[in-house]
Image (cartoon, rainbow over all chains, first blue to last red):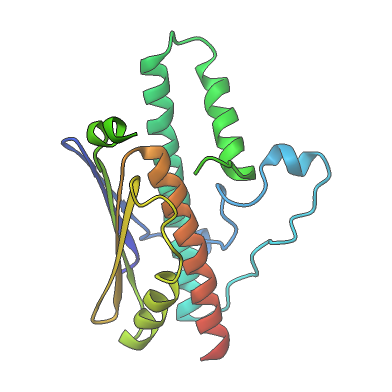
Length: 110
Length: 89
């Protein structure tokens, strides 16, 4: 059984699985590390994860990376929805992108 | 502040199960992760449990935002723990 997760809130339930072929998995997360914006400005990612070994723990690290990406993307979408429900609907995508950037590059609040 | 807390509830819940090869590995991960203090216990509850060789993590947060920050941070640490186990075993 690969790593999995279940999210629950006010009657809603969402399940996450990482039952994905090995060659589709990587240790490089889409939602972790410096944002594309920072990298495009010439930054070097000194915390870049090492490649996974060909071992059970190597596979587990890739699966956890996938799970982390899926959960991050799901929760970001929910935050985005909540923001657009509250606001007037204008430039919400921009705000969500800004929020994602803050989360990637380090927000101080949490 | 008290009024805010009364209004807020831990409405966002996430349960994660991570299967290790052995109970010892899962226990190492649990003991390592639980060293990190919860900085805002009013906003977030985190529990770790080992069931045979699985590390089960339970998160309860007052918002999706708090949940996202906490879960991503814990999973980031977990990846390091897994890498270290892989290197030393």
